[in-house]
Length: 48
Image (cartoon, rainbow, N blue to C red; front, side, top):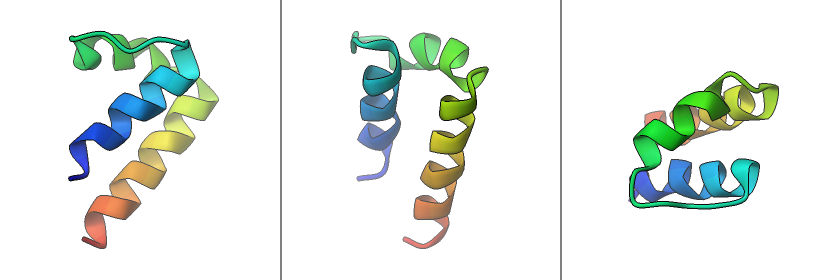
């Protein structure tokens, strides 16, 4: 279940989780911590 991973990252970074995580994570990706989180997310998926 890798998909909820980025939802929790988004929630941790922005302080809230909504029903539309895709539109909410886009601004997060512009932040350094968001980029780092997505690198970890990709790494976790590659090693499933």
